[in-house]
Length: 185
Image 1 (cartoon, rainbow, N blue to C red):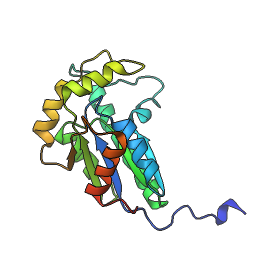
Image 2 (image 1 turned 90 degrees about the vertical axis):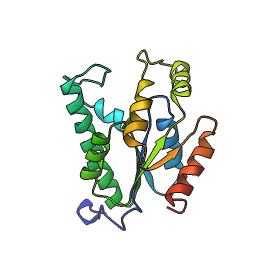
Image 3 (image 1 turned 45 degrees about the vertical axis):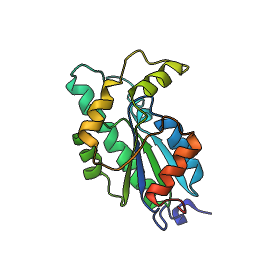
C-alpha cells in the first residue's frame, strides 16, 4: 500500500484526560494503567517532552525561575498538540503532568482543542506522596509536598478529585473511568 493513500485521521476519540497531582501522587503509574484499560489510547508523559530539550532545558524548582516557568508552558503546549493529533487519529490521550496552579490549568484548557477534556486530580495527601517519592528507585531529593496546599487552594473546584492514598492502581483507574464516563471508550 502506498503511504500517500493512508488516511491518518478517522473517527475522533471520545476526548482526552489530564491526570495531575503532586510528585508521588501516582500520576505516571495510574496514567499508564488507565491508557492500558482503554480500547485505543496513548499515554503522554509530559516530563518526557521536557527531556527532549537537549541543551538549555530547565526543570521546575521551588525557587522562582522564569525560564523554567516558560518551559512548563512550552511542554504543556507540545502535550496539547500531540494529544489533539492522537484524538484526530482515534486514540484517547491520557496526559500526566504536575499541574497545581490555576494559570497552568487555564493554559491547558486554552490550548487543548479536544473536548471533552477531563481533568482528574490524584490527591493522596502530602505525607503519602512524600513516602512514595522516597520509595522510588531514583528518590527525589526535593520535597514537593508543599505543592499539595497550592493545588488544593487553586484547583479545589476543578475536575474530578480522587484520594488514592489507600486505593490500588486498578481501583484508582476504576474510579477515573466511572467519574469521567470513559469506561466504554
